[in-house]
Length: 484
Image 1 (cartoon, rainbow, N blue to C red):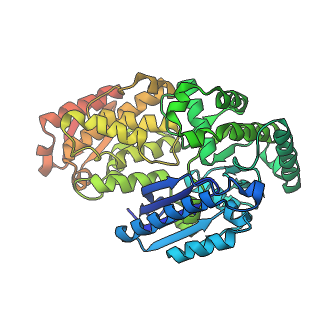
Image 2 (image 1 turned 120 degrees about the vertical axis):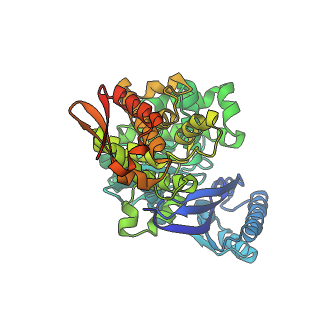
Image 3 (image 1 turned 90 degrees about the vertical axis):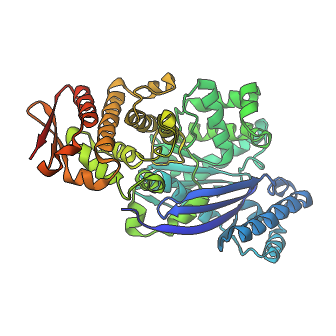
């Protein structure tokens, strides 16, 4: 059942590089961003050299905040959290800047370095509940490192090594390496990071991930959850310096300018931590702030399933249906828990395209699966959901054959089977859950059996029988209808 809806709420994140407004609404466990705007104000650009926020950056940031305040008034959003991080925290004129923000009508809280690290860890856990390693949040003014394990973020550390402050050249790299080595040793993170994933948070590292996707021809350009081998860190340094036209076209100039420093810092961290994987997270302190307010059972809810249930619920025709649909087709499959989870997500999204033209329903389902704002899901799992939804709308093959490279043939075939079973259920029931509750699907004596009450035998029409035969053929079985 759907649980825990939130009223729209806004978080304004005043960072060293950007000032961003995000408005969230929807499921309590995983509220969706319904508005997102950033201004690259560069507040931290001068702090390392002069110790203060420069007038030009000051004015740009305040202009953005005035706009945000007016937008929120027009949107009717009354819950607003305004956070300031390293640039404002470290600047000699930071308190004066906060006073200007208060005069705009925003209640600004300057978070400590320890809070910033912890919230970054919470953000990664919100998107990836099983995260087990070290989180690195790279901003303009600072780099936060924090361990995550067993659903909790530990005590982190903060270093003045943001992309606007770390510097370039051999001397800057040597200084950064020494600072990292000392911090990792003193905090004990060096030992805790070895052989475990390193989770990359921050826009400059996401830009590096996009560059890697372009360079490797990765077929699904979704940054959240993107994985790289640690050895890619050295190649990313070369990519950041290459000014590849494809990268220049895909990444904003201001963000592209920070990638050489981001790549240098990532390479140093890989050398010292020796992680097993590099995993990109689009979730950071904003999402961590939301997640940190949840308690007990709400924190333990699966973000993929909650997100799919919320998205599917907006479009379904006849009330709660996805969970019933999954239970109805489940007797046909001996799926492992991880696969059952992906099958359930596909069932929850099974009604997302019914309003589209019949010729485009498969396209709508595939688009939703591949490019929806999901977390807690890998790229191959996105492809499996897309395959199931495509098959459920009568199209067996994905529109881009390169996507199939992310999964095994057996995995794709199973997703096709899920889709065929969903397609049968939708034809039989007309999208109404009560029909599925009155009927039963099972495998018996080498046949896929559709059992219907005798008084409702007319439900098993010729079109239904054709879809039943399709499911049975996909499973290598005969098809049978039993009324009684």
